[in-house]
Amino acid sequence: MTKTLTMVLMDPPYETETTTTALRIADAAMGKDHRVQVFAYEGAVNLTMAEQAPHPNPVKGTSVEEESHPTTKDWIEALYAAHGDQLDWINCGLCVDERGAGRTIHGPRRGGPGDFVSWMEASDQTLVIPTR
Amino acid sequence: MTKTLTMVLMDPPYETETTTTALRIADAAMGKDHRVQVFAYEGAVNLTMAEQAPHPNPVKGTSVEEESHPTTKDWIEALYAAHGDQLDWINCGLCVDERGAGRTIHGPRRGGPGDFVSWMEASDQTLVIPTR
Amino acid sequence: MTSVLSVVSTGYRATIEEQDDTILWFTAMCSSAGVDVSVLLEGNAVNYLVTGHDVGGLRFGELEVEHPPVLDRDVADLVAKGVKIHYIREDLDALGVAEDRLLDGVTPVKRAELPVLFSNHGQIWRW
Amino acid sequence: MTSVLSVVSTGYRATIEEQDDTILWFTAMCSSAGVDVSVLLEGNAVNYLVTGHDVGGLRFGELEVEHPPVLDRDVADLVAKGVKIHYIREDLDALGVAEDRLLDGVTPVKRAELPVLFSNHGQIWRW
Image (cartoon, rainbow over all chains, first blue to last red; front, side):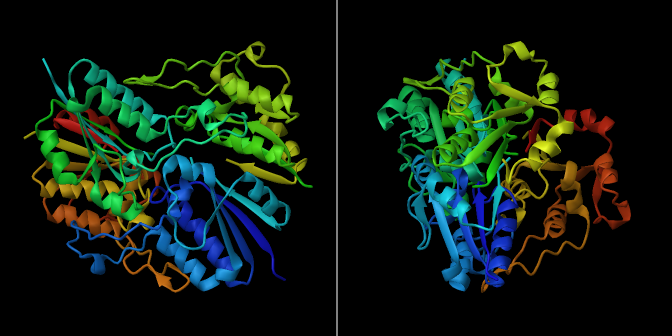
C-alpha cells in the first residue's frame, strides 16, 4: 500500500553527508511506489538552485567532462526524472529570500510552514533531518 | 603601522555565529587602519549574493521594514562602504560554480587558491576560520 | 491531530544572523497553523530561558543591527500562546544557572523522565 | 617562505557531495602554488589513510555518481607530491585501525608531540 513520507531538510549543499542520505531514503521510498514530500528549510533551499554548474578539478587534472561531478540540483532533477509524479518539493520562501536563492530547477515550489503542516497531517510519517 | 590580515571563511550564511565574529574582527582591524583580505571558500561564497532580500517576520507580526533584518550581503556592503579601500574579497570560483552563486554585490571578485597563496605570502597574519 | 514534541538541541545556532532561533520560529509557525506542539530545550538551548537577553549594539560600519535576537522574549511569547516549554534540568545545572533566573511557566524534565515525555507525544522532531 | 601545517579535523565532511575532501583539495592547490605545507589528520580524518576506500555505486534515478571520492588515493597523491602527512596516533587507535592497513609514507604523531610539531611550522591552519 502506498504511503506518504514528509521530510524536512536543512543542510546547505556540499556541507555534510546528511543530504545524500536523505535523498537516498527518498529515492528508495519512491522506488517502492511511496510518495515523498520534501520541505527544504534554511540552507537546504540552496540545493535546487538552477545555476549550479559542474567544474573541472585542477588537483586531479580533470576537465569538467572527466570530473563528471553531479551538483545537488542534478541529483534532485534525477529524482524528478525517475519519480516525478511521486515527489513534491517546497522551498521555504522566506529562507529563499534571505539567501537570494529564487532561481531553481523546474519542480520545487515556494511555500511556508503552513504547507509543511498540511503535509504532516496527511502523511504516514514525518522525518526531521536537521543541521548541526 | 598598517598591517595586512588574510582570513579564510567557510560557513554559509545563516548557519553559525562564526561569520559574525569574523566580520567583527575584520571591521575592528580596518577601523584601526589595517588591511583585510577575505578568501571565501565553499559555502561562504553565498554570503555576498546580490539577490539576498530581507523578509517580514510573521511570528512577530512585523513587516519587512519593522523587522529591519540585514542580510549577510548587507553587512559586507556596509564594510565596503566604511572601509572600501582597505578590504579585498575573493570568492572561490569553483565553489561559486557548483553553488550557482555567481551574482554578487559589487566588490567581491572571483579567484582561486593561488590568489589566497599570494595574499598569505604578503600578509602579516593569516587566519583560517573553518566550518564544522 | 497528533501531538508533537519539538526538540531544540542547537542553542544559539545562527541566532545573530537570523535575529531569532530558526527552530523556535518554525515551531511557532506550526503552532499558529494548528499543530499541538510542545518544546523541549536541550543543551545550550536551555539558556534561552534566562531572562534579560541583550545582544544589542552590533554594527558593521554604518549598519546597525536594530532588532537583534531576544531569545527569552521569543520563548515567553510561545508560553503566552499556550505552547508548553520543557527543559532538561541536568543541562541547566551543567551551565550553572539557578532556576530562579528563568522565565515563568516552563517545566524542568530530568533525563530519566524523557522516555515518558516522548511517549506522551505522537511525533518527536529533534532539530 | 613560512612553512604551514594544515590540520584536517573534519573527516568525511561533504566528501560524497564534493567527490573529494575540501581541505585536502585546498592543501594540494596551495602546495602546487609553492607553499611549503604539511598535513595533520585529526579525528575521523585519520581513516583517510586506510587503503581500499570505495563508495562506488551511488545513484539517484538514472544518475550515477561516476567518480566518487577516493580519499586514500587523494592522500597518496599528496605523499607523491612530497607533502608530508602526519596523523594522530591516539585517534587511529580510537578507531581500532591497525597501522599495517595504512598507506605508505605517513607519519604518526602522539598528542603529546603536537606542540613540537606546531612549533616546527610558521603557520597552523586548523580546518
